[in-house]
Image (cartoon, rainbow, N blue to C red; front, side, top):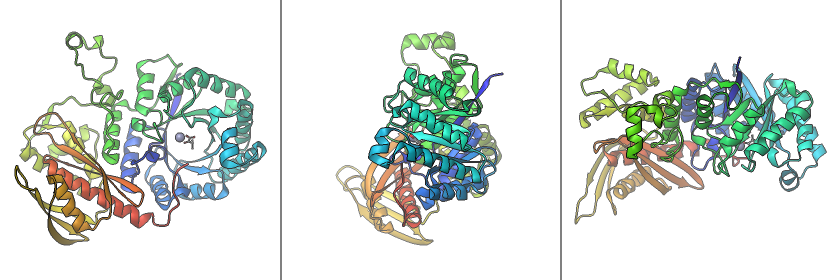
Length: 514
Ligand code: KIV
Ligand code: ZN
């Protein structure tokens, strides 16, 4: 029997710490549902003490998810651990994940604690956590720059106090595959009672080695990998889930007789949903999920692939759930066909979300001859991630052309009341944004504006991503429409709604992060 590799997804916690990747409750819930479909074993839902928003997110996921283990992060302080326990109270399968740094660098400069104090803190925090949950994970932050003998001592204390998963983070992305594998092998030998523990790895990608390090650790006996979809995370990101899973699947046996429980056909839908939620598209040449990951450009490659795909393809797009660009539906398709097609794509929308998606689909089918699976995914993702809306874009009219200054007339619903205005700008997008800013009275600055074609073709839908910032809070909004100007207006309004949502919920918060 193969050994199971537990996939611990931290997209919603460490991933969310990427600049501009903060997510609201609805977005976290939509992603968590998709992660459950993907088959991850553990979802780290947030860091409950960090903010009311994080607390709410962990609590809501704990209430809603029934199959997967739901995990909350806590430093070792008693208040952190009890707050995590409170958020996880409704969970069917709760895990408390507590951590403290163990490197002398962190002890001296950040914690100002002695090694003995750290040992005491670890024992106390893990015992406290065990009072609330049977499943407790302990992480030694900056493990890879810690003294090995001390690290083994820390893990022995954690195990003795009741932790069952021992995580060895490469917090600053400093280690290398052979060094990391050696560390895991050392710890398995040196930690007292290690045969009762699951060793876990958590790699950051500062040197581009996050995935390689994680896999090398599996070869040395690690059995849990912490990773994120699209590799998002602090600084250069975390080890990417899709790269780890597809390596283990494509090269069976290379890292031992191991397997994950991941449904690989859900990898691409998960990646797309995350990009829609965060507005951060993966680079085109990103392994597995990038636009070009399966595109063969060179003639000699195309020739080979046409003769036999095995010549240049080590895995198929279908194995990660990438649909071929076939025509799926047309303007005569009804609700039934639309729902069936969404289900085939693994998307479930119910009630109002389904009805709104159907209206959007019909409008798109009128405007666009060919509708691809990606179009449907873009519409559905847009529906799944909408926030409670103070503002709604009702109408948008643009006048622009050579020799005139573009003018936008917009009307919005503001807390249910219709308001309209006009503005001119340097370009049409500038005019739209000025008019919307006027109606919403937003004080935010525009940081970035991006357009991405959802599919090929001149009639492709445009997916617009807008990043705005107010008082240090940065949010991303997106909008999808066959008319890029409408997509732009929607994206801007979406971003402003998110800012409003954050403002109303995070007023009294401490800054988040580790
Ligand atoms: O990178 C890190 O050390 C972490 C820990 C909290 C696990 O994210
Ligand atoms: Zn981390």
